[in-house]
Amino acid sequence: MSPDIEGLWLFTKYGVPIADFTCSEQSTDKSIIGGLVSAIKTFSQHLTTKGLQSLMLEDSKIVFFSALQGNVIMLIRTNSKAKDKRVNKIAIDILRLFEDLYDVNDIENWDGSTNFFKEFQERLCAFFNNL
Image 1 (cartoon, helix red, strand yellow):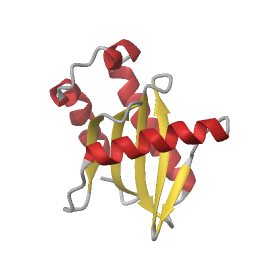
Image 2 (cartoon, one colour):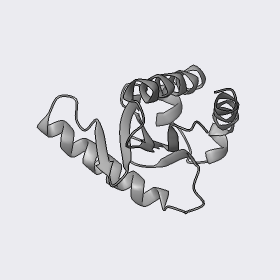
Image 3 (cartoon, helix red, strand yellow):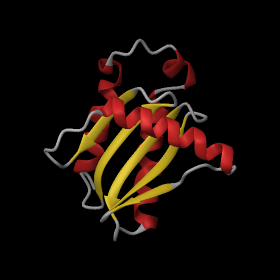
């Protein structure tokens, strides 16, 4: 994983976990994170046109990105001192990887098996190894 990225999570717009990659050994309940993210994202979109873009937590920053016409939410956790421009470039590259493999129908018809995203996980690992 990149030194700029401490964690990455992908969820459906309903908060169902798709994939995650973290540097820490600390386990997190992805379904709780997904539900929270989905609720916050939906609520924030009622307040502004773009909705929530980022969130600061102590020395970390969580940045939100959307893919496949808003059907997928990607969260990237960075150190609060990481350069926004670099994080955004990495996020765009990751979203391209994802969108090259899947479309909206894939997400809408997904049966919940994380094996469906195995190729994406392999490509993402290769991506991070080449950074």
